[in-house]
Length: 271
Image (cartoon, rainbow, N blue to C red; front, top):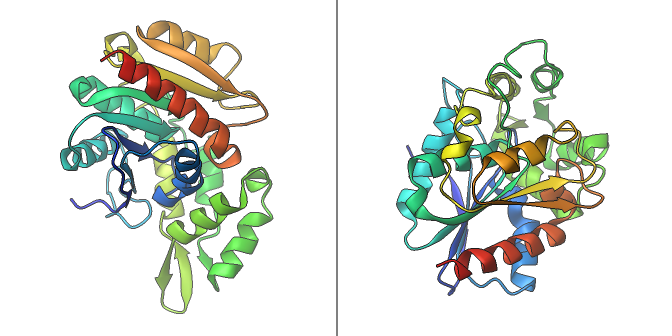
């Protein structure tokens, strides 16, 4: 397979590999990358589209183990020390990768990884599945798409460039229209297969330093759940971003960049 990537070159010794959430694409990391540069990170950065997202090939089976395979492909292209940074489903895929190849990582920074017992979302009646399946697929223009999403409450807290990047990386031309690169039916299936990654029952096996990042106002985790995850991972820390929900990378890219740099300093000191 050939996954679509975007790379920001750098001279530092550590490469950041950025993994996006369900329904998103590689460009949504652009505001975080800009903040990382402003705050002094000078290493190479690679972001990529998971299969069935952005400009990567489509999948037929949306079991989350496939997304762990996508991370493995990206790691095969990257030399030297790596720090994985992931959001939601992308964070879970990085955890899968850490279970298979812990030696590839200095550490990981994971924003609200979807790590729940199997079958948590395995239902066509789950609101996330229903919402994704009903998502508007086609738009007359890029401006039409941007206006459509800007009116949605879920995007109201995003910085402007995050929304622009989401639209830029998430549309493909189709006849006389623009269509979502991540088909609504595929996004719905990804949500419905949450828990198919095998991570929940193996957290104690993780041998990679991990920072778990949670939005203070998140509605993804029930109260106390992120602390349970932290307690099950041997080498882990917890960071909370005030005023952010589940979409912290797009809502507060500067704060997340600061967390990444702080975590990176700790990872490097452990070498």
